[in-house]
Image (cartoon, rainbow, N blue to C red; front, side, top):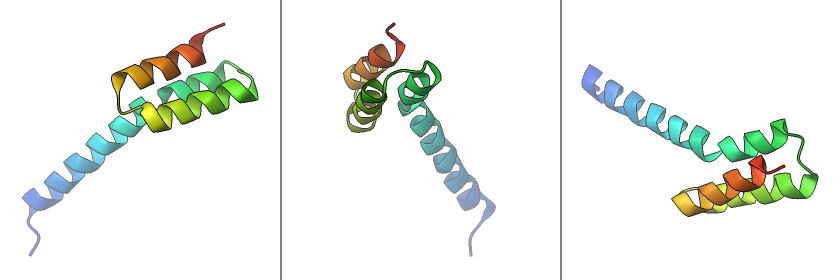
Length: 68
């Protein structure tokens, strides 16, 4: 049987993964919201998806999405 503690543990992991995905994809959202060129949006998305797990890759994607 599944207890309430097991369900709460699963919910905790689902919320943690959702928050992580939102943080990693923030640069891609900023690039789309700032009307960047198609090339910059693609570069931001790929940098965020491929290197978003590392802090340096995420900062690079954030820099590309936020520059004027």
